[in-house]
Amino acid sequence: MLAPHYQTILTEAGCDEAGRGAYAGPVVAAAVILPPNFYHPLLNDSKQVKESVRNQLRTIIEQEAISYAVAMVDNHEIDTINILKASFKAMHLAIDQLTVKPQLLLIDGNRFAPYATIPHQCIVKGDSKYASIAAASILAKTYRDAYMEQLHATFPQYQWQQNKGYGTAVHRQAIEQFGLCSYHRMSYQILPSKQKNLF
Image (cartoon, rainbow, N blue to C red; front, side, top):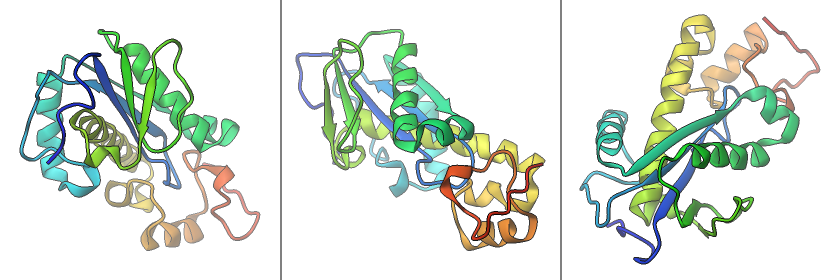
């Protein structure tokens, strides 16, 4: 069971990202401040939750959160500054948008670029330990999935409505057949050759 909070004195915001390992599309991050002792029996790390439940949880989180925000950094900036820095930037952009200023940031993972004057705590597998990080993982995942489904309408050959831009066999085969598009991450050296097809 997820812990409702890391500590009880400071206002916490959980932060997580989605899309770090994808071949295409943005990295998306969310920051969430939950009410004290928030609990939902289905809330968990987004990777452990079915899509239909994630979408249900997204609505609940948006309704119940004290404050939440979602931000993205696109594939072009990922190629420019690298995926790790882009993930941190997306988290910072999400934190910027919170209407309530947190006093402590709970970060999923083992590294983070410090944010202004707000202290942070990195927690490995935090999205399966603390409710606010799990909530952030749900929002980041559902927002990114929805965005990739929108892109699928323009680039249906890659089947992004299913693979969400990750390097599945179907996606890799489509890249071999059709080349890369303007939403692929060129710095990932996805193609075995130096071919770069942009359309």
